[in-house]
Image 1: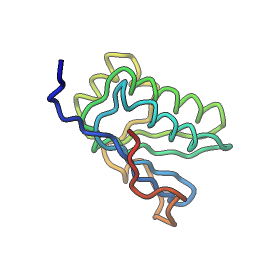
Image 2: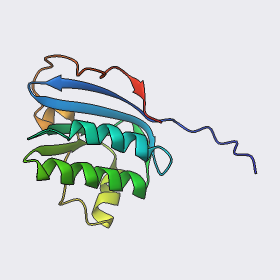
Image 3: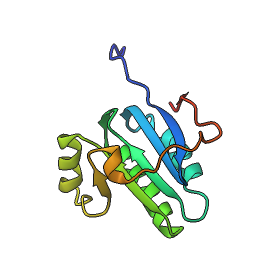
Length: 133
């Protein structure tokens, strides 16, 4: 059966701001795209004390595979003594977090400024817009 649905392939941009890595994810984060996104987040959370902000405002869809990769990124960050914040203005996504009992697990903010991201100091190597799917 042919799939006539046009997918919004996820991509990301990445930058550093005063020691904080800000990753903006866009598109759909689902079972097909999650492995590539997870690989990037694994790289970002590999060092000691990662300070990571995931800007999810441009994400159009996330399924359980996407939630799993967010949990993995959080667990890796916490295990290395770091901090992870999510930025989303989606009431639907917040409802999903509440329904899965994850709302208390993540620091969630509606605006990037609320996540206390310092001024931009440079771009992470390879942090230009790149497809992840």
